Length: 168
Image (tube, rainbow, N blue to C red; front, side):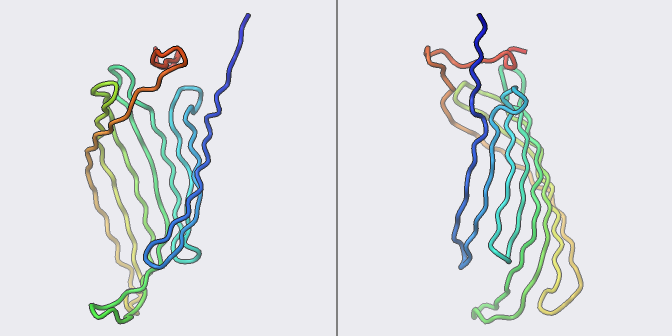
């Protein structure tokens, strides 16, 4: 006898926020078992109804045993902002687009602790600054280091979950 039990691996996440006088809404979807390999795919976006539009796509292969994990992603969008002086007087608007790419490696230090290090490349193009139609480009590279603390996943019999993909 062969039995197959499929897990629901797509998780929809609606988002509603309020920040700096604007409402934001959007949605993301997570696939926690992409290609049946326990890889994580995150895709989605959000908008502030005219001022901001942003989209995100990430793909992550988790660290397993002595094999490090890897995460790659892109994030881009458009932002329309008002500019004020120190007395909070309106002085103009600016419009910008941004694009961000990310690459990170992760290592399981213990079953509960993961270290992630990576780099992000950012590109911004800003125009219409206080009535000036000239565009300004800005590029930057940033580096990051995170420690994540979380419990290991356990099956119904109390043993840590594994799959054939984990054992390869």
